[in-house]
Every structure is written in C-alpha cells, then in structure tokens.
Image 1: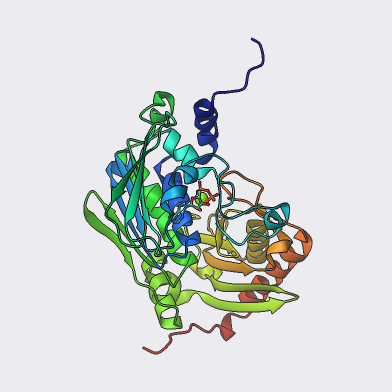
Image 2: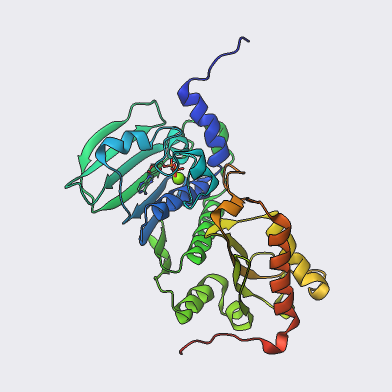
Amino acid sequence: MPIRILPARLANQIAAGEVVERPASVVKELVENSLDAAATRIEIDIDKGGTKLIRIRDNGGGIAREELTLALSRHATSKVSTLEDLEQILSLGFRGEALASISSVSRLVLTSRPAEQAEAWQAMTEGRDMEVKIQPASHPVGTTVEVSDLFFNTPARRKFLRTEKTEFGHIDEVIRRIALSRFDLNLSLRHNGKPVRQYRAGTLPSQQDKRLAAVCGPAFIASALRLDSEHHGLRLWGWLAPPEAARAQPDLQYTYVNGRMMRDKLLNHAVRQAYGDRLPADGHGAFVLYLELDAREVDVNVHPAKHEVRFHQARLVHDFIYQVLAQALEQPLARVVPQAEE
Ligand code: ADP
Ligand code: MG
C-alpha cells in the first residue's frame, strides 16, 4: 500500500485507543477537565456502567460559544502553548486530545456557559463525522458533557466492554481516587438514577478523616499512621497502614504527585521497600500518599493516560519517600492518629 495521511476521523479513532479504554477512562478525562476549569462541584451520572450514558456536570469556568468546536478538535487545548509550559505543567490535562478522542467514538453533547456569557450554547457530534452542530441551550455557569453510546461506531472496541457491574466498578474506583485527590471538592456519583457516592467538601483534619473513612473504610483510618515530612523542596504527607493492618489485596494504595493520581513504579518501589519484610508474605500495604514537588522536577508527559511520571532526580525522590515511610513504620509507639475535634 502507498503511504497516505490518515483521514482526521480515523486518526482520532486510533488516538482514542490510547486515551479511551473503557467508560472509566472517559470519566477520568472529563472530571480532570472539570478540575482544570476550577470546578468546586462535580456531578456524575452514569447509565448502564457508562456504556449507555456518562454525564459530567460542573460549575467551572465554562467554554465560550466560539470555542466549543475548537474544544472538540484534536490538539486543541487552552492549557499549554509553549515548550516552557510543557516543562512545568500544573493542569491535569495538556494533550488536547480527550474531547476529540471521546467524541470520535461516541455521541457527544457539550453544553457550556462561561460567567461572562448571558446564555449557554451546546455542541453536538455523532461519532465525529466532523460536523459539529451548535445551538442555544439552557445551563448555569459551568459545563456539562454527555457521552452516549460509547464505541457505537467501533464494534471491535465495544466487544471488549465487560458487564455493567464491572464497568461501573472501574468508574467508582476513579471517583474514589479523585475524591482523595481533592478534599475541597463536592463530588457526587449516581448510577442508573440512584445516588452511589456523595462527598462533601471540607479540608479540616476531621473532614479529611471522614472522607478517608468513606473511601477507605473506618478500619483504615483507625490504624493508619499520619505523616507529613518536608525535605529539600519535597513534601510527603498522607496516611500509611502499619504492617499489622496489611490487606489481602493491594486495593488501598493511592498515590498522588502534585495532586495527580498515579500508579508510578518508582513510588511503589519506595513504599514496598519501606514496608520491607515487615509485611506478611501474602499481605499488601495500604496507603494514601501525596508527594508534592516543584512542577519542573517532574515530567508528566510520559504516558497518554498520564498514569506515570518521570522524576528528574529519581534517586532523591525515591530515597526521600523510603526514609519518611521507613521512619514512620519504625516508631509504632509514637503513632498519632489525629482523632481531630470529635
Ligand atoms: P486538554 O484537557 O488536554 O486541554 P481536552 O480535549 O480534554 O484537552 O479539552 C480541550 C479543551 O476544552 C481544554 O483545554 C479546555 O479549554 C476545554 N474544556 C474541556 N472541558 C472543559 C470543562 N469541563 N470546563 C471548561 N473547559 C473545558
Ligand atoms: Mg482534558
């Protein structure tokens, strides 16, 4: 076959394979967009495990009418404009790919109203035949994205979807991770019209504990070591279960780098090493850890779904995490569980 440039639609569908694996990845991308738009309230409605409908409604900054079509185009982003920006990314998104990818494999309706616009407008696409229809709509300041019939035009992808329950389980997990990433966020999740999660904003220690108990269970927070250490511009804080509270599954392991949820090898390695042989052979550690460092010290543009990062000073970061955790685990008697005000 001769070499040809792919038609835009096909290129988007191929790219969608990297970003949109299943309904939960759509939820993650859309909620991250809401967070980048400085939303303080995000409401998520899911029908049939997200295969029928994913609706994310936020009270963020909104998108101007004349930018709606652009927002749905590939490589269109308001978050990065120079290479310098790319070297110190503070937003969760930056690739300008999510909306284009998602709209290429679904029926998508984007409704938005920025504060300075008197009315809301709506853009609609169907499997990205590139024709974006725009019409007036009714919506308070903020944005709603509705994604229906995911993969309706890519049957091969659709076949890989699991049961409604499994897909919803993945969505729920994304929401739990987001809930722990931002204590100042009101977040709700409904499935088939029924409320499933409801997290209220609150950053006081007692409110953090409450959210942690809701997400990780009361047993976790009752036994967890609370830590907060800083060294050379690196800060690590969060909660760590002592070895006695090891779990049969690695299901309570949450790590964040500058507010971004991660499954990073280096982080996990440092944590595992800190637990060392304190854990029973078949036990897994449980932790919710937040690493904060200068955005220039970490490259987030490593993985399309942004699960992994690269640290410029990997050794330093690794050893810092290891030391903070190992020290916490060595001093079980000094354990302080902040029971806060209650
Ligand atoms: P990225 O997040 O990488 O910039 P996306 O395709 O996810 O790319 O979004 C494209 C653009 O659309 C964003 O840069 C942003 O300007 C706008 N946008 C998307 N979702 C929202 C939202 N919920 N609120 C405000 N603006 C949004
Ligand atoms: Mg995005």
